[in-house]
Every structure is written in C-alpha cells, then in structure tokens.
Length: 195
Image (cartoon, rainbow, N blue to C red; front, side):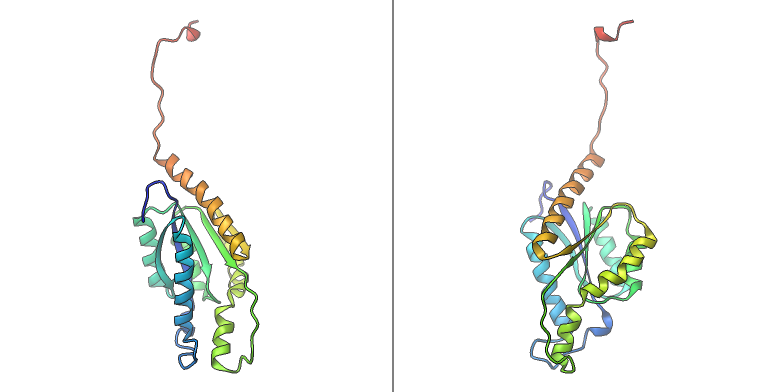
C-alpha cells in the first residue's frame, strides 16, 4: 500500500556473497535462506507503518547499483541500512559514494544469541547470521571517512531501532514535502509599508 502521506523508505539490507551457500545441509537452511527470511521479517514489520522500497538482500556491487536506482526512481524520503552479517567493504563504500544526498539511518538490531558448537555447520551459519555487530564496527570507519551529511546511527533492541526509524522517517518525509513546496509573496496594498 503506497500513500503520498506515508514515509517512503528505502531498505538496504546487506549480506555477504561469500557465505551464501554455507549451511546448505543444515536443518535451518543455508546462510542465504536465513538472511532472506530475516529480510522479509524486517520489511514486513516496517511495511506496517511505512511504504518500503527494497530489492531484498544486497550481496554485490551490481545489486547495490540496482537498489540505489530503485530508491531514486521511487523517490524515497530516507534509506535505512542494515548489515545482516559481516559484509565486504566494497558494497558499503559504493553505497556511501554513489547514493545521492538523502537522510540515511544505519541501524543495528542487537540480539541475545546463545551458540552451541560452531564447528557444526548449522551453528557456524547461525553465528554468521548474527554477526551484524562486526558490520557495525567495520562500517564505522567508512562513515567517518565519507562524512556524509544526514547520516545517523542507531544500535539497540528492535523497539529502539523502530522508534528511531519512525522519528527520522517523519522528519525525512517533512524534508521531502518542503523540497516540493512552493512559497511566494503576493503583492498587496499594505498601509504599514508606507514611508
């Protein structure tokens, strides 16, 4: 459901191409299956209150270019970025370099995870799919280096992240509306202006 009054967000969910096939034989599925499921849950939760533009999980530079093009074509008010695990710098750097100036919220949802024996394929993939914190540390240097205006960060449980998305989203929507507004002065007879 798309409404001209709803905040329209671009959702950039980054995953690691190198991990895609890991865990294919495990009962919980491969890395790719797990991050795709997580991506759908995130998009679904955000879609309840906002219009979401997403190309799914972005693994490489070409997919990043496609996501940026989709965000521009749909004229999103802001972009929410989440690392679903550790992600190579080149995709994140391309986004920071090529995305036009727009409010961006880098978000990380913290989870309590209890891991078993990570030598077992399924547990290792579980570890990888919960390694977004590594992404937070990794991307912080790039954020400082690019020094993009209107780039914000949030880290915490889902409720904290969602509240920040809504707050920044409302401000970004107002920004978009003001960019489209036209203001003017109408000439009129006004005795106060007599000299």
